[in-house]
Image 1 (cartoon, helix red, strand yellow):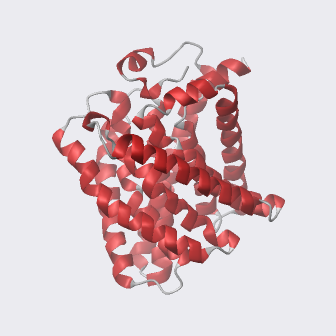
Image 2 (cartoon, rainbow, N blue to C red; image 1 turned 30 degrees about the vertical axis):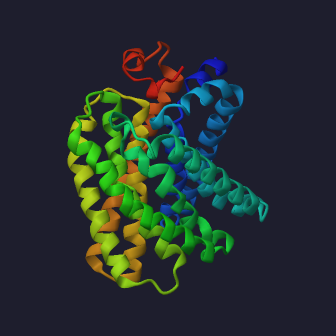
Length: 318
């Protein structure tokens, strides 16, 4: 039974781990109990993913040859960075070294992904997931204050900010010139909502004297991306469940984190309202996706998504 569950754990589950752990930190001002619950759930998901990687390294090695899975695999290192903020509270200073290790591992995966897939793209396989390994390192900026590493966080922010601006036309070109036909790939567009908010959150977490032009530029871009993806949600939620549903989680959580930090800095009442609305929605969608994953991993006994597997091995779960 346990072996079957571990076999079914898809790489995108790491994205749910990242979202859940981040949601806990988002909810901390409202309830430390909710933060702890999210941290425990995130830790359980981290363990599930880690066991899968340890028990089935050949499967993971094959998955990394797929650009979609290779890109979303970095949500594991991103999630580990966030979980280290919990470990720092629970276990003390040794979490700092694990945090550094997760950054180094992320950089390694980023370099592999860039060389393997970004430099010579196959455009039909380019998705919003391409933002994840490159801009996703800015999670280190968001978590840096927990370890007193704000200076490093600022450097990482500027890297993420510049590469994000370079990637926007790169990724958008694919979506404008090619239709996404496979249902399992359609939820990936939700990742568009993440990079602007992530860079804004990273900037405001580490920069003691933020430049207002950067803040306002990212607020406008992040809000536009959030609204664009929210407009897609009704049709996306009608799709059959796929592991790629994980793409619906972290982008909404980090959007709420970023708007909350911006509202605190700028003292804008309307932005505080936006942050609250985004927080409620983030809680709702993360809970929904977790429930769907629980059903998939622990309740469904058949081999679901076989049809999708034949169409696209990016969502192979067994």
